[in-house]
Image (cartoon, rainbow, N blue to C red; front, side, top):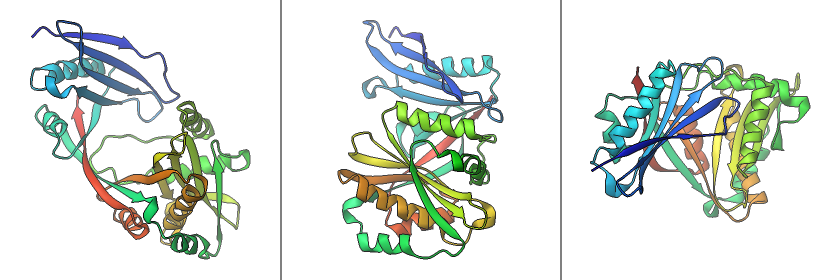
Length: 293
């Protein structure tokens, strides 16, 4: 089979990355597969690239994926990247493909979903109203309010010790500019970002956050982006408090929403326990792979 790999231009860089893309086509010009390579550009992650590769089911085992992978890896090397990461559903064709081509498993992820039709609203309300002395909840849609922007950006360091096992992910450096850019990126996609945060009442600073992204039409499933608490404030039930508030928000604001989805490192036992306590049920597992260049 004759196979052409065509480099494509992605004209929309973000504040933290840019993308390269390739299309594989056959003799008749029909598309057979594609590859996207995200090149991270922020300080602390300039060494990293993230690969997304897809091949039409009927065209697998014909060399399409291998050719696309070669193009992406060559580009990563030309861009002086140290690591390429990619994710695959456990035991899927992509899982075997990456393992056979020099990628190594570095992180196991557990995916879970909460069916909103099954939620006991009274239980959720009780969790949200449960007193947490010294703390209060606050919530906002879209971009963080100016009065909280600085401490919210600082609170993002709560993700620094998130279990990443062997992943060469680098250190994400958050500031107000990056927080605002992330919220604006969600809005440009036509999605709705809602953030629940915990504030320390002694000084008014944000010490934890939980982000929920919902489709613009309020249907289908929402997705939890990140939930984290600063180390010095852990062990007080704040993560469950925030996630319960996010669930209540979804029930109140988006009655057509079917469920909420989340993913968690299998080694992150505290967050897995929070999800289970709130009624999230496992859907599948995935594997994060890494290729060292």
